[in-house]
Picture 1 (cartoon, rainbow, N blue to C red):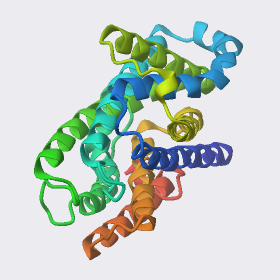
Picture 2: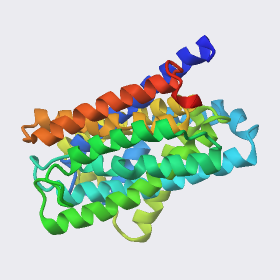
Picture 3: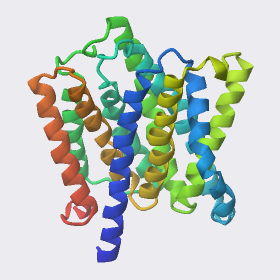
Picture 4: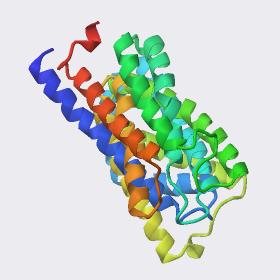
Length: 315
Protein backbone atom coordinates (compact mmCIF):
# COMPACT_ATOMS: atom_id res chain seq x y z
CA UNK A 1 0.00 0.00 0.00
CA UNK A 2 1.27 3.46 -0.88
CA UNK A 3 2.65 5.23 2.22
CA UNK A 4 0.91 8.54 1.49
CA UNK A 5 -2.41 6.77 0.97
CA UNK A 6 -1.96 4.87 4.22
CA UNK A 7 -1.31 8.08 6.14
CA UNK A 8 -4.32 9.73 4.51
CA UNK A 9 -6.58 6.80 5.37
CA UNK A 10 -5.33 6.73 8.98
CA UNK A 11 -6.04 10.45 9.20
CA UNK A 12 -9.55 10.00 7.84
CA UNK A 13 -10.22 6.98 10.07
CA UNK A 14 -9.58 9.25 13.06
CA UNK A 15 -12.28 11.61 11.77
CA UNK A 16 -14.85 8.80 11.66
CA UNK A 17 -13.93 7.67 15.18
CA UNK A 18 -14.20 11.27 16.44
CA UNK A 19 -17.61 11.65 14.79
CA UNK A 20 -18.82 8.47 16.49
CA UNK A 21 -17.71 9.78 19.89
CA UNK A 22 -19.54 13.06 19.26
CA UNK A 23 -22.72 11.10 18.44
CA UNK A 24 -22.46 9.57 21.91
CA UNK A 25 -22.34 13.02 23.49
CA UNK A 26 -25.40 13.90 21.42
CA UNK A 27 -27.23 10.91 22.93
CA UNK A 28 -26.35 12.15 26.41
CA UNK A 29 -27.58 15.67 25.68
CA UNK A 30 -30.85 14.34 24.25
CA UNK A 31 -31.72 12.68 27.55
CA UNK A 32 -32.84 16.16 28.59
CA UNK A 33 -35.04 16.68 25.51
CA UNK A 34 -37.42 13.72 25.67
CA UNK A 35 -40.49 15.98 25.91
CA UNK A 36 -40.02 17.32 22.38
CA UNK A 37 -41.59 15.67 19.30
CA UNK A 38 -38.95 13.63 17.49
CA UNK A 39 -39.47 15.27 14.09
CA UNK A 40 -39.26 18.72 15.65
CA UNK A 41 -35.94 17.89 17.31
CA UNK A 42 -34.60 16.69 13.95
CA UNK A 43 -35.77 19.91 12.29
CA UNK A 44 -34.41 22.39 14.81
CA UNK A 45 -31.09 20.60 15.44
CA UNK A 46 -30.34 20.21 11.73
CA UNK A 47 -31.23 23.85 11.10
CA UNK A 48 -28.82 25.08 13.77
CA UNK A 49 -26.10 22.74 12.51
CA UNK A 50 -26.67 23.72 8.86
CA UNK A 51 -26.45 27.51 9.22
CA UNK A 52 -22.62 27.72 9.56
CA UNK A 53 -22.22 25.35 6.58
CA UNK A 54 -24.60 26.96 4.08
CA UNK A 55 -21.70 28.83 2.49
CA UNK A 56 -20.30 25.50 1.25
CA UNK A 57 -23.45 24.77 -0.75
CA UNK A 58 -22.32 27.62 -3.00
CA UNK A 59 -18.56 27.32 -2.59
CA UNK A 60 -18.39 23.59 -3.36
CA UNK A 61 -21.28 23.40 -5.83
CA UNK A 62 -18.94 22.53 -8.69
CA UNK A 63 -18.04 19.21 -7.08
CA UNK A 64 -21.73 18.35 -7.06
CA UNK A 65 -22.41 19.55 -10.61
CA UNK A 66 -19.41 17.65 -11.97
CA UNK A 67 -20.27 14.40 -10.16
CA UNK A 68 -21.91 11.42 -11.84
CA UNK A 69 -25.61 10.64 -11.73
CA UNK A 70 -24.80 7.75 -9.39
CA UNK A 71 -23.11 10.13 -6.92
CA UNK A 72 -26.05 12.56 -7.03
CA UNK A 73 -28.56 9.78 -6.43
CA UNK A 74 -26.37 8.41 -3.64
CA UNK A 75 -26.35 11.83 -1.93
CA UNK A 76 -30.14 12.13 -2.12
CA UNK A 77 -30.52 8.58 -0.80
CA UNK A 78 -28.13 9.33 2.06
CA UNK A 79 -30.13 12.41 3.07
CA UNK A 80 -33.38 10.44 3.15
CA UNK A 81 -31.98 7.39 4.94
CA UNK A 82 -29.67 9.03 7.48
CA UNK A 83 -31.02 12.56 7.84
CA UNK A 84 -34.71 11.70 8.09
CA UNK A 85 -35.45 8.00 8.62
CA UNK A 86 -32.35 7.03 10.61
CA UNK A 87 -32.57 10.01 12.94
CA UNK A 88 -36.31 9.52 13.44
CA UNK A 89 -35.96 5.85 14.40
CA UNK A 90 -32.85 6.51 16.53
CA UNK A 91 -34.31 9.38 18.57
CA UNK A 92 -37.59 7.47 18.94
CA UNK A 93 -35.65 4.52 20.38
CA UNK A 94 -33.84 6.82 22.82
CA UNK A 95 -37.08 8.40 23.99
CA UNK A 96 -38.54 4.97 24.74
CA UNK A 97 -35.90 4.17 27.35
CA UNK A 98 -34.56 7.51 28.52
CA UNK A 99 -37.34 8.63 30.81
CA UNK A 100 -34.88 8.87 33.69
CA UNK A 101 -31.54 10.67 33.76
CA UNK A 102 -30.01 7.43 35.07
CA UNK A 103 -31.39 5.25 32.29
CA UNK A 104 -28.62 3.56 30.27
CA UNK A 105 -27.60 5.11 26.97
CA UNK A 106 -26.41 1.72 25.70
CA UNK A 107 -29.38 1.52 23.34
CA UNK A 108 -26.88 2.84 20.79
CA UNK A 109 -24.96 -0.42 21.08
CA UNK A 110 -28.01 -2.20 19.70
CA UNK A 111 -28.08 0.14 16.73
CA UNK A 112 -24.44 -0.71 16.02
CA UNK A 113 -24.92 -4.42 16.69
CA UNK A 114 -26.30 -5.36 13.26
CA UNK A 115 -25.36 -2.28 11.23
CA UNK A 116 -21.98 -3.66 10.03
CA UNK A 117 -23.78 -6.68 8.57
CA UNK A 118 -26.01 -4.35 6.55
CA UNK A 119 -23.02 -2.26 5.46
CA UNK A 120 -20.89 -5.24 4.43
CA UNK A 121 -23.75 -6.70 2.38
CA UNK A 122 -24.50 -3.43 0.58
CA UNK A 123 -20.82 -2.45 0.22
CA UNK A 124 -20.19 -5.62 -1.73
CA UNK A 125 -23.21 -5.05 -4.00
CA UNK A 126 -23.20 -1.27 -4.45
CA UNK A 127 -19.52 -0.36 -4.04
CA UNK A 128 -17.98 -3.68 -5.14
CA UNK A 129 -15.77 -3.67 -2.04
CA UNK A 130 -13.96 -6.92 -1.33
CA UNK A 131 -15.17 -8.60 1.85
CA UNK A 132 -12.65 -11.19 2.99
CA UNK A 133 -13.26 -14.06 5.44
CA UNK A 134 -10.74 -12.61 7.88
CA UNK A 135 -12.45 -9.22 7.84
CA UNK A 136 -15.69 -11.02 8.69
CA UNK A 137 -13.89 -12.87 11.50
CA UNK A 138 -12.54 -9.71 13.16
CA UNK A 139 -15.84 -7.94 12.57
CA UNK A 140 -17.78 -10.83 14.05
CA UNK A 141 -15.68 -10.72 17.20
CA UNK A 142 -16.25 -6.95 17.45
CA UNK A 143 -20.00 -7.49 17.17
CA UNK A 144 -19.79 -10.19 19.85
CA UNK A 145 -18.29 -7.60 22.16
CA UNK A 146 -21.03 -5.13 21.25
CA UNK A 147 -23.61 -7.84 22.00
CA UNK A 148 -22.17 -8.36 25.48
CA UNK A 149 -22.30 -4.59 26.08
CA UNK A 150 -25.94 -4.30 24.99
CA UNK A 151 -27.32 -7.57 26.39
CA UNK A 152 -25.25 -8.46 29.49
CA UNK A 153 -27.94 -10.85 30.75
CA UNK A 154 -28.26 -12.50 27.30
CA UNK A 155 -31.89 -11.36 27.00
CA UNK A 156 -33.72 -8.99 24.68
CA UNK A 157 -34.33 -6.52 27.52
CA UNK A 158 -32.24 -3.43 28.10
CA UNK A 159 -30.93 -2.83 31.59
CA UNK A 160 -32.97 -0.20 33.36
CA UNK A 161 -35.90 -0.18 30.92
CA UNK A 162 -39.35 -1.73 31.12
CA UNK A 163 -40.16 -4.74 28.95
CA UNK A 164 -42.52 -2.81 26.66
CA UNK A 165 -40.03 0.04 26.33
CA UNK A 166 -37.30 -2.47 25.52
CA UNK A 167 -39.27 -4.17 22.77
CA UNK A 168 -40.34 -0.90 21.17
CA UNK A 169 -36.81 0.47 21.46
CA UNK A 170 -35.39 -2.67 19.82
CA UNK A 171 -37.87 -2.33 16.95
CA UNK A 172 -36.95 1.30 16.35
CA UNK A 173 -33.27 0.41 16.68
CA UNK A 174 -33.51 -2.33 14.06
CA UNK A 175 -35.17 0.09 11.64
CA UNK A 176 -32.38 2.58 12.37
CA UNK A 177 -29.83 -0.17 11.66
CA UNK A 178 -31.09 -0.54 8.10
CA UNK A 179 -31.36 3.22 7.51
CA UNK A 180 -27.95 4.14 8.95
CA UNK A 181 -26.24 1.09 7.46
CA UNK A 182 -27.48 1.81 3.96
CA UNK A 183 -26.64 5.51 4.35
CA UNK A 184 -23.01 4.61 5.14
CA UNK A 185 -22.71 2.81 1.82
CA UNK A 186 -24.48 5.46 -0.25
CA UNK A 187 -22.63 8.18 1.66
CA UNK A 188 -19.33 6.58 0.69
CA UNK A 189 -20.46 6.45 -2.97
CA UNK A 190 -21.29 10.17 -2.84
CA UNK A 191 -18.15 11.18 -0.90
CA UNK A 192 -15.87 9.64 -3.51
CA UNK A 193 -16.95 12.35 -5.98
CA UNK A 194 -18.63 15.18 -4.06
CA UNK A 195 -16.82 17.45 -1.59
CA UNK A 196 -17.51 16.37 2.00
CA UNK A 197 -18.43 19.94 3.01
CA UNK A 198 -21.12 20.12 0.33
CA UNK A 199 -22.48 16.74 1.42
CA UNK A 200 -22.59 17.87 5.06
CA UNK A 201 -24.32 21.16 4.27
CA UNK A 202 -26.79 19.54 1.88
CA UNK A 203 -27.69 16.76 4.29
CA UNK A 204 -28.27 19.07 7.25
CA UNK A 205 -30.18 21.78 5.36
CA UNK A 206 -32.40 19.47 3.30
CA UNK A 207 -33.14 17.29 6.35
CA UNK A 208 -34.13 20.38 8.35
CA UNK A 209 -36.40 21.70 5.59
CA UNK A 210 -38.10 18.33 5.12
CA UNK A 211 -38.55 17.84 8.88
CA UNK A 212 -40.05 21.31 9.31
CA UNK A 213 -42.46 20.57 6.45
CA UNK A 214 -43.55 17.39 8.24
CA UNK A 215 -43.93 19.30 11.53
CA UNK A 216 -46.09 21.91 9.81
CA UNK A 217 -48.18 19.32 7.98
CA UNK A 218 -48.90 17.30 11.12
CA UNK A 219 -49.17 20.32 13.43
CA UNK A 220 -46.36 19.33 15.77
CA UNK A 221 -44.56 22.66 15.77
CA UNK A 222 -43.32 23.89 19.14
CA UNK A 223 -43.50 27.67 19.75
CA UNK A 224 -39.95 28.97 20.05
CA UNK A 225 -40.92 31.21 22.97
CA UNK A 226 -42.05 28.14 24.95
CA UNK A 227 -38.59 26.56 24.87
CA UNK A 228 -36.64 27.32 28.04
CA UNK A 229 -33.14 28.74 28.00
CA UNK A 230 -31.83 25.47 29.44
CA UNK A 231 -33.44 23.43 26.68
CA UNK A 232 -32.06 25.83 24.06
CA UNK A 233 -28.59 25.18 25.43
CA UNK A 234 -29.06 21.42 25.21
CA UNK A 235 -30.47 21.71 21.67
CA UNK A 236 -27.64 24.00 20.54
CA UNK A 237 -24.95 21.77 22.06
CA UNK A 238 -26.46 18.63 20.52
CA UNK A 239 -26.78 20.36 17.13
CA UNK A 240 -23.19 21.60 17.20
CA UNK A 241 -21.52 18.40 18.45
CA UNK A 242 -23.64 15.51 17.14
CA UNK A 243 -24.96 17.53 14.20
CA UNK A 244 -22.59 19.96 12.53
CA UNK A 245 -19.12 18.94 13.71
CA UNK A 246 -19.80 15.19 13.68
CA UNK A 247 -21.35 15.33 10.20
CA UNK A 248 -18.38 17.19 8.71
CA UNK A 249 -15.92 14.84 10.44
CA UNK A 250 -17.82 11.77 9.27
CA UNK A 251 -18.00 12.64 5.59
CA UNK A 252 -14.41 13.89 5.64
CA UNK A 253 -13.39 10.43 6.81
CA UNK A 254 -15.78 8.63 4.48
CA UNK A 255 -14.21 10.36 1.48
CA UNK A 256 -11.19 8.08 1.96
CA UNK A 257 -12.10 5.18 4.25
CA UNK A 258 -13.95 2.23 2.63
CA UNK A 259 -17.48 1.64 3.93
CA UNK A 260 -16.49 -1.82 5.19
CA UNK A 261 -13.91 -0.20 7.51
CA UNK A 262 -15.97 2.88 8.41
CA UNK A 263 -18.80 0.77 9.81
CA UNK A 264 -16.49 -0.82 12.40
CA UNK A 265 -14.88 2.52 13.29
CA UNK A 266 -18.42 3.65 14.16
CA UNK A 267 -18.27 1.19 17.06
CA UNK A 268 -16.52 4.01 18.91
CA UNK A 269 -20.10 5.24 19.32
CA UNK A 270 -21.24 2.54 21.79
CA UNK A 271 -17.77 2.54 23.37
CA UNK A 272 -18.09 6.26 24.12
CA UNK A 273 -21.64 5.72 25.36
CA UNK A 274 -20.32 3.00 27.66
CA UNK A 275 -17.82 5.47 29.10
CA UNK A 276 -20.45 8.20 29.53
CA UNK A 277 -22.79 5.77 31.28
CA UNK A 278 -19.95 4.81 33.64
CA UNK A 279 -19.33 8.47 34.49
CA UNK A 280 -23.06 8.96 35.11
CA UNK A 281 -23.05 6.17 37.67
CA UNK A 282 -24.69 3.40 35.64
CA UNK A 283 -23.51 0.03 36.92
CA UNK A 284 -22.05 -2.51 34.48
CA UNK A 285 -21.56 -6.24 34.74
CA UNK A 286 -18.28 -8.04 34.15
CA UNK A 287 -19.70 -9.26 30.83
CA UNK A 288 -20.20 -5.68 29.67
CA UNK A 289 -16.65 -4.73 30.63
CA UNK A 290 -15.37 -7.77 28.75
CA UNK A 291 -17.49 -6.76 25.75
CA UNK A 292 -16.02 -3.25 25.73
CA UNK A 293 -12.47 -4.65 25.82
CA UNK A 294 -13.24 -7.01 22.93
CA UNK A 295 -14.69 -4.19 20.83
CA UNK A 296 -11.66 -1.97 21.40
CA UNK A 297 -9.23 -4.76 20.50
CA UNK A 298 -11.12 -5.76 17.34
CA UNK A 299 -11.62 -2.19 16.10
CA UNK A 300 -7.87 -1.67 16.52
CA UNK A 301 -7.22 -4.83 14.52
CA UNK A 302 -9.61 -3.80 11.75
CA UNK A 303 -8.09 -0.34 11.50
CA UNK A 304 -4.62 -1.91 11.14
CA UNK A 305 -6.12 -4.07 8.45
CA UNK A 306 -7.30 -0.97 6.58
CA UNK A 307 -3.86 0.63 6.81
CA UNK A 308 -2.21 -2.36 5.20
CA UNK A 309 -0.18 -3.26 8.30
CA UNK A 310 -1.47 -6.81 7.95
CA UNK A 311 -2.26 -8.93 4.94
CA UNK A 312 -5.83 -9.64 5.97
CA UNK A 313 -7.35 -7.68 3.12
CA UNK A 314 -5.63 -9.69 0.48
CA UNK A 315 -6.25 -13.14 1.88
